[in-house]
Length: 242
Image 1 (spheres, rainbow, N blue to C red):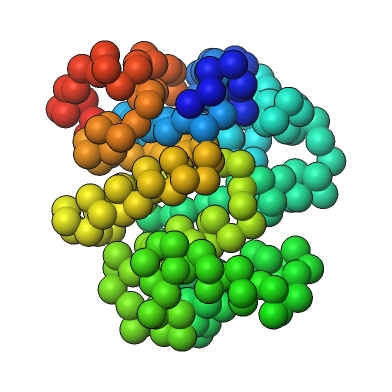
Image 2: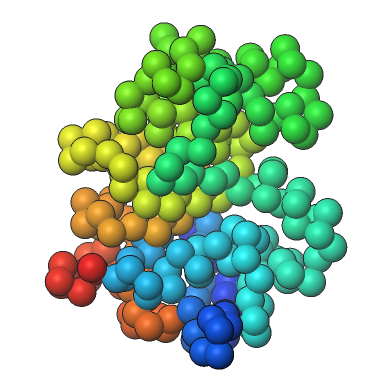
């Protein structure tokens, strides 16, 4: 973690929705700096606003007020084409439900972001095979998602997130659909990749095992940043996470 280099910064971020006649504040004034190369876990009970905040950093949702800076730029002041470029080139996304294309092989799924960016098929497949090997799936590149276990599918999703060599990986409940043992393997893999690739990993999670490998933990409750702790100072109240 490089504390001298801020890769993302939230300033007084709010997000409100209208549900019928009711106004719901999903986020209510969050400010936070995220450092280059750190492993940050965003934790909080369901409905706390952690996924909304996570989506803001990934340029998947727009703040009602406040700003998100990403690599020095005001993210939502950029033209939509530039935001799309950042989403494709600088951020890798890992979802709880894997979001793989079921009719495409592991290799084709991982190569897809590169092809969308204009890489040749040969180069995209070469790079995809290389990254699949890094996540332990070099022997499964021709398999369809339906032929893979949940843990293997999540490894494909991780490889896909890495293929464009992003600066940040956003992992939304990456162990949510996995059993405890496989979930622990995925957590270990994410930590190894963060270290090897010097990538910033931001995860929204309920999984307490994630705390052991995090550099910092942001606890969000009722749309506000309740506390931000270094790993060494973490106090866990598991009852507050559900």
